[in-house]
Image 1 (cartoon, helix red, strand yellow):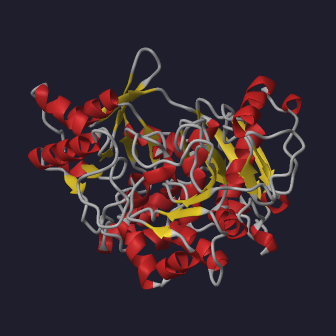
Image 2: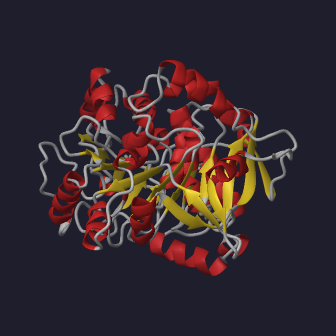
Length: 466
């Protein structure tokens, strides 16, 4: 019997350990294997070619998101090179191996890390893997979730297990309360700027503190989504009453007596008082303003009203100078007022209903500035339908946005949709790497509110000044 105080990471890990191996790693039971169109068909076909079967079809879920067309009236064709082949292969393998697939045209379709919490597939205390680096998003529901390669994904499909090394634990505590137009995106960008893009390498981050407790579950999903950008193995938040309210009644959640038992077990996952962490980081959410990135890494973030720093004042002056050169910026310049060519609201980071509501509140009664390309890609078909029921689509369209179907879309360039070289974009996505949204595209990351305010102004704009 374990009597020492444990963190939530340790509790979930211990509950899922099948065996401790001689090299110090663990053989873990995996509760859910999650697939998408870009690699799901490959993993399933490889498994079949090897003469193996899916261990438990009920524990495998897939969705079409990475290479689907997001334009209105879409079908299985896509502008992504070979994209239709990926879609058809995934659909075929999912049917042959009898797994649940949220296909194009299914009301449950959407971006993986939006639909799996939305449907109640991601649940507290579970272990989940997906061949996608932003799988830690699902940790916002108190799960242990991480991205894996296609080979590991295939192994999990065949055995419902993976060999993993236990991560170190980092507690990130956000004290205080966020101010006006300061959102989860701003909190996590400030964290990454403080500890660096590799500051959490090898760690599982547990987000906590008064500011986190104030966040709704959709905002918590944003926090955990970007744990990856700090180098973390995963990120998670302990279950609480807010989470239980969010989960209850979702399609794949327990019901009736099973719900009552599960809910209590989930609350018991919270880290014990006195549990030891390998590292603790504290940030005052009350002292933060809206954040915008100026470089080519999420760690290149600062307050929207702060000047761009000198490369010598950063942790990596060479990388900072390269980033400034790519972004065509200079130290000391103000981000506020910097002209942009395009804006994008979408991705697994910030395209949930609450994100679209925030952006719509900023856009209501306004028009996108002349010459600005503006697009919104809801995170799931369910989000899109709910937004349309509230009239949010009309606000976006009247303002001058393209209102698209759900998918990953312009979060990353895979040969399909892209912005033109030299385009300066402010985006609600999670990565501002060189060429991320197209060759030569310059991406600034921000919250949906900041993106919407910038669309109206035609330049990077503080949503508090609206």
